[in-house]
Image (tube, rainbow, N blue to C red; front, top):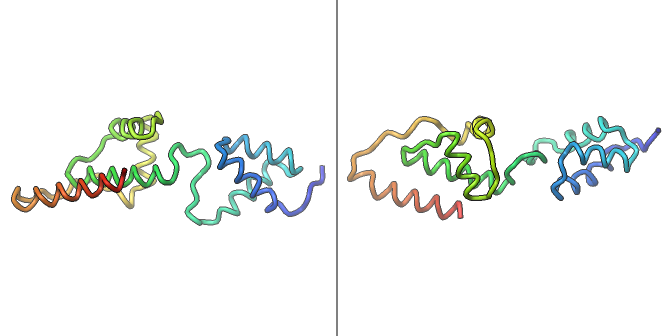
Length: 146
């Protein structure tokens, strides 16, 4: 079937479906069927149109806002010398947003945010120098997460 030649016309239809919560694979198939483009052409148009604008993949578990909040929460724990393990990270996601994730998801999430997170803990300061600044930092980060 010979469809229209400009596949960029399919991208807004596809983005509507993805924003509505449809799985990316299903959205490719539906837009392909409605526009007459092949699934491969729709997929290529979608990935080409995204072009490094910091877009979020349609199949991610967390929204961009939730993702950023989780980064801030993990940073707060790291700055207080309590790095999170994968099960702890998964428990935070479940507690905050009610979304169940697995240890493998947590590991890949940490890899994706490697430039913002560190598995090394900060050098401990003396109690007099550390106590008030750490508490203020934790409270400030907690307010940002909320």
